[in-house]
Image (cartoon, rainbow, N blue to C red):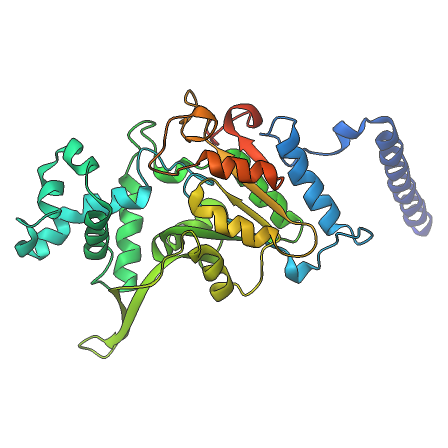
Length: 348
């Protein structure tokens, strides 16, 4: 029995050694492309993809003069138009418009008051012409006056049934596959990814972890005040109030990053004039920085709007020629949906 155990042990060791040698020998015969998986497989080869790969390579290689310490690896992403579809209107605005009947039922005095009267009419053309102050009134009425828990539950319920008018799919499925790959690639290389959005912070926090793998504490958005109180049975709760604390758009984005994150990003991604200051502030930091803009120039697979490069003027997610020229001047890579992305959505 002693000899059998010894023989068996020798046999196992020989097999393990042989397997290891075979694996090592096989790797020398395989081309590099067969040995590694492309982390950005939904991207076409080009300047945009190369910029991302090069940035991660030089900032994570300890031997590189551009090396970035792990604690400083911060990447900021706008959401609407950068991570998911923003046309024909922002997802959160759709939610607010569809919540108007519920709000009016609880506050009947609003029924004959504008802009609630127009929304209740169902006249799409009239609703589309509502002014920014009108929309602000609607947002204030539909996003406040409830506990933070009730709001979260209501958003989850709405997202489960709401569908985009073009694709007839949940809004949470209309994320850009190439950008999901960038998020994952950065995190795989030690970067902490943040959403920095002009949208409502509480709204985005409901689904950010499930959709993007970004936890709620890494969402920076426009945020209103809350008031602490107690229920009749003594349970503490927070009520959402119509008091704007941070408008996280334009200059509000770098201000929000400083307030909520406390570190300047080494990478920032946007798609519109609302992201310009965030990219400028990111690029102004020392060391290697990556600042990129998504250009919606693919009407067949998504939408085409600018008005940069002669595209239609987009009132939602405006990308002006001036912003395009600034990107060119400062060497900010512009991502062309049409030319740089093999696919748009995960379901393509």
